[in-house]
Image 1 (cartoon, rainbow, N blue to C red):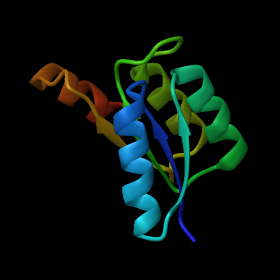
Image 2 (cartoon, rainbow, N blue to C red; image 1 turned 30 degrees about the vertical axis):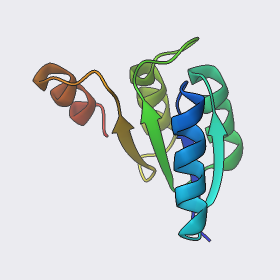
Image 3 (cartoon, rainbow, N blue to C red; image 1 turned 180 degrees about the vertical axis):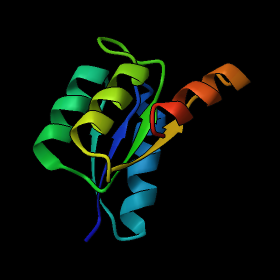
Length: 96
């Protein structure tokens, strides 16, 4: 089974992604903020993370850097409503 983590502060989106991924056979845990998300990442070591950039307590940029520092093999997919070329370049350089 593939283990995944969804980190997003929007409860409706977080739950929708969890349901969608579980229907496809993934094991899914969720977190509502960056601190909780990174703590769960350290505990679970999921194969991939869906990560929002705009998070309370620790932003997604910091979570991404910490994840990639801990595990270069973990795939991180950024989900955000705040797009732009600068953001895209930044997260790609950070390993997303």
